[in-house]
Figure 1 (cartoon, rainbow over the protein chains, first blue to last red):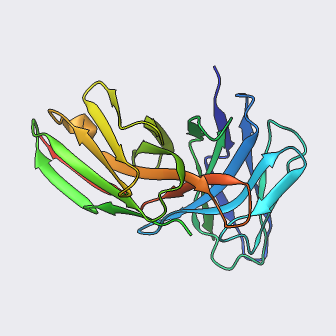
Figure 2 (figure 1 turned 60 degrees about the vertical axis):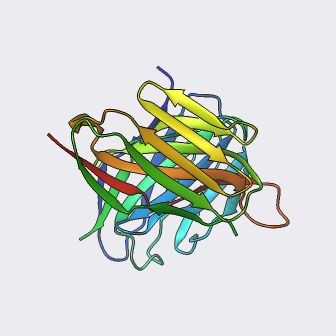
Length: 112
Length: 117
């Protein structure tokens, strides 16, 4: 089955620790996106990538980093510089601008 | 910069009613508009995609309309059921930033819908 897989579903981070969220898609989509969702704030764009080996900052990129070494994979690292990382993180992909965007099931990150 | 607003923020209605969710956006230069459903703690499920050249799309009991020139879309749900209870998100696809070619989705904050049995 084609789709987007995010892992893990739940993640706990200690203060000062970097953590990496995985996003894999087998839809052959060129574009991939990372969003952060907080209660009452909607989805906000963290990073996006239109093609392999290229990515751009979104609206709230500070404290995050990404890589796009393979078309199928777009991992997000939440660094210790992100002061308020507790949120629900969603990964999305799409083929062209006139086609549907598809989302993964999300990763809930909690600082402990 | 594109902004998307959804009204109402929350809605609670008895089962069987027809209802309308509203979405407005500030920049009419969009590629398409997509309606999503989100259940608590889950990802987003795509419901309907309307291209910028289209006026409406239908899927089962759902009908979405688009008036690009006025920056408005509505999602009509017929004969609502308790299983329709969820948060409904509207997203427009447009250029993310002026001067750049990249496009992506800008979301509203959603309408939290409760259908009472």
